[in-house]
Length: 85
Image (tube, rainbow, N blue to C red; front, side):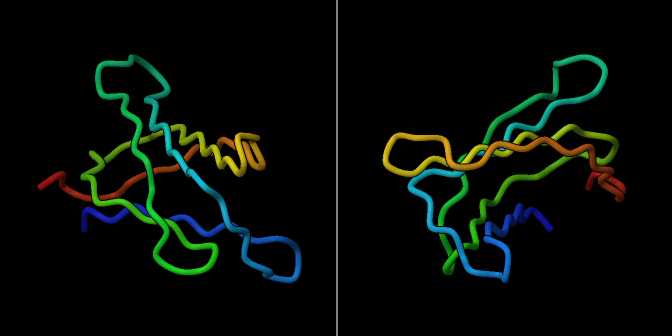
């Protein structure tokens, strides 16, 4: 589906509450499909957005901010499988 979901938790699965969570999707080669989307809170420590993501490899950089300070910053390479419809 068109759902992007991200869980943010401390060790022991204690949810982390952030003021802003942003996902930056970047292609490993080229940048014409790159985009950023702000995720909204849907539950304690769970954030989501509705945005189609084309199949293929992506580097996803997640940034969470609380009280104007970055509280989490990570990047992972993922593969989206599907036909792009």
